[in-house]
Each structure stands twice: as structure tokens, then as C-alpha cells.
Image (cartoon, rainbow, N blue to C red; front, side, top):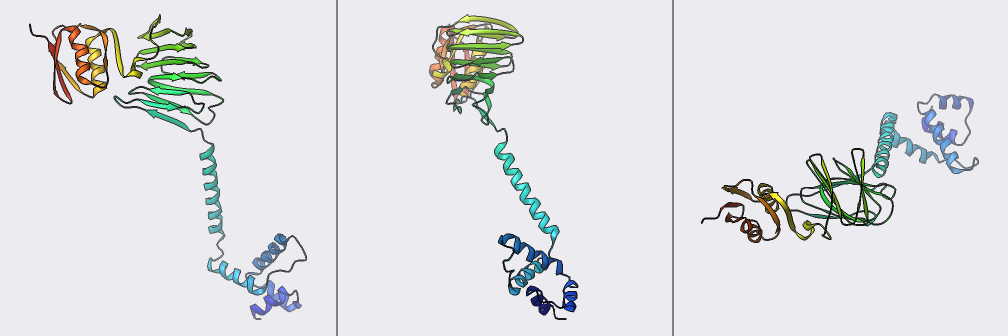
Length: 301
């Protein structure tokens, strides 16, 4: 019996007993029934007319071209689900922001609550923005100055200790075995091991190779914010190392007195002036060989 004839009779709901048997024998009989059923379901009206034979036939031809491959359809559906899930997880993941600086580089970071961080050279700051308003916490390696907006507790975690404030200005240095916290405004709480130290404005806590000390300060902000490096009774080798970092140079010296100590400062934007600031008080001389090499030696009598 002709297939198209049987389908037309089926759509018109006018099948004889023999024609009904012929329809059921069709390979696609179940598919035709599902199409008609779906048409009724989406119409919202069980009395709605089913699609015409031409419409259904065209749909079937399209499906036949695709070989009615349910595995392919399932694969596509799975792909859509995977994509949707990936997008969902992307927008809802705990995103960590990392800011790092190179030699002689500083960076200004504005946090989600408009708190400001000045990150010194060779430092790294990590924080999450996803729940910042609920938990103002960040991690620091190196040195940074913080100008914190008032609000919930603000925590800075380092390898050697943790600093907590509500709203203030303070500086944190954490490099190697040195941990130093300086409070310029407000009140800072420092935790290390099982101890808690409170620092009011104008005070400083330092932990150097396990030796803790609390002292007063007289400056209003860190010197490095003004492009200055300041030292107090510091070994000359440490001063020259800092100079090398700030200017990306190599220093060779033939200083006879290796235990020289330096108290003073040098600026970060003029190498000649910086070298004069260091060498003249110690009766040393210097020579700039090129932009990357400097020699320092004792003054000749």
C-alpha cells in the first residue's frame, strides 16, 4: 500500500482496518504519532488541528537526512549542558586577583570597597572579589602601604603574621625573615604565633629573625612612597644591594672596610645623586662605567 496515501488517511483520521494495519507496519509509525502528539501538546488545545501531511513529511525528510540519530541529539544536548554548567561555574567561582611588581616598579591598587594599596617593588598581592564586602582579606608577599576605608575588619595575611584593622593607614613589610608593620593612622592589630600586638598611630612592630621589637616612629608615611630608601645603622652591603635593585645595576666594590654601616637615604630617580648620598658620608668614591655597571672604592688620600 502506498505510504503517502496511508499517511494522508491517517492524518484525516479516516483509516480503514487494513489501512490502520498498514500504518502500524510503517518503520516511522511511532515517530509520526510522537510528532502529532507534540503538536497537540504545544497548541494548548486538544481540539487543535494537527499539521498537514506536507509539513510532517518535510520534517521527516529533515530527520531522515540526519538519520534520526538519537545519539547525536543526546551528544548535542550533553554539550549544551556542559557549556551551561561551565558558564555557571565561571561566573560563580571564587576569582582570585593577583597583582605583582618587578624590580623598581610600584603599583597602585583600588580594592572593591575603594580602599587603596600601594604595592612596593618585588611584591605580590592576592585577594578575592567575589565576597569582598563580607570578608576583606588579602595576602601579601613583600611590602605594601594600605589606606583602608572604614567598614568590616580588614585582614592582611603574610608568612610571618597577620595584620587586622577597621580603617586606617599602615605599611606592611614581609620579606624573608623580616616582618614589619607600621601604623600611621588609627589602630592596627598584629598577630604572630600566639601573640597579639596593638599598634596605635605613630608606632611600629618589627620581627627580624625571630627577634620582636616595638618602637615609635616620627614619619607620616613610608619613605618608599616618596621614591626614597632610608637606612639606620645598616651594613653597607645591604645598602648597595638595595641600590642595585632600585636602579637595575651591578655594583663591584673594593671597599677595604667591609663592616661599614650607613645611616641616611638615597633617591630612586637619579643614580648620580643616590651614589653621592651613600659614598660621601663614608669617604668613598664611585665611577659609573655605563648605565648598568658601577664601581665603588675607598677615597684616595
